[in-house]
Length: 126
Image (tube, rainbow, N blue to C red; front, side, top):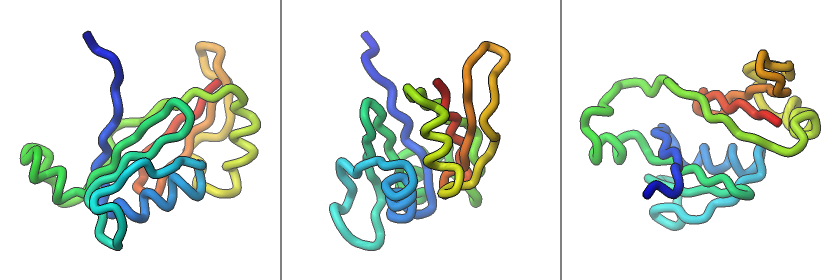
């Protein structure tokens, strides 16, 4: 039976992505390949109960040739739930580029959205 799902996101630069998620969002690198260096091809980051994997474009296309593209264009959003969306919004609003300001959704949740360093949209909700 299914147990978990973890996004593996294609990026141009794994090291820069790790820095964004650590410095702006408080994630921690669990592992990277190689473990250190300027040219990383893969990394797993965690924060609380969330895990995200990032893989360098050429490496991921090597595994899945059908993903071949000259430019990485985000085609998804990540939806993160938190216990205090206003506090998280106030913490992040001056550190990151806001994709959508704090608002109440049609289904009654308070949310906002940000762009990560790769242009991916992360919706943060409570």
